[in-house]
Length: 318
Image (cartoon, rainbow, N blue to C red):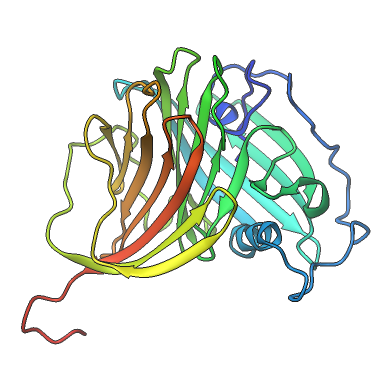
């Protein structure tokens, strides 16, 4: 979600994550003033009988992401050098029906600087048939799986415009996301890794390391579940033994704490492409979130996998 900085791209979500320089929300902003108490006036939560795919998508995100998230954000150049790193708190509060959200982001820099951003938004104005939007962006959409995995992305690429994306994976009190920004020339500009914990950062799990690490690979057989979401928010789930990880010519970026990004160095013209993040947790679970675009630059699907190593033949599970 939104970070402490904005850009000429209308304060789009990941630009705020990955650009430098403080500035006002601009261009496409439809920001709503933050107002004291959360209100029920925007209406009741949708009933089970009346719920739509858009409602399910909205409620799936807020069922998992409410509360305070304490973390560290680190931005990198395309070659892997650290641009900057700072501590943060992202705080999401909702009314009892989860239809009205207030967000407060606070940032603390090593040189003593501090920054704060606030937004207010609601299901009725911001939940759309192709995902929900944040008050700071008209073109990006939020898509959420039931277990907390989620994405902020542009459903349809706009010619001569930046492409921005943030992919989330979650494990209980832990959350990590990876952001990418492509320029108007379709070249990769920046990446970012955000590691968060609701109990405080770095906590027992995250390291304080910020430099990118040596490549490592996933080997052997894995089994688990894969949930797929279409551009219309339709969903399907199946068992799988296949890791859906993009192949060449994607490049791979290795962040600390067993987090890997796969993305093109330059977005291809008139060809499909994919961006994916994998996270190997300390308990051995492998999570992958992957977004696929077609040759026309339109979102085709978002996938989330949760896998464990397959039992060796002849062994007894557990």
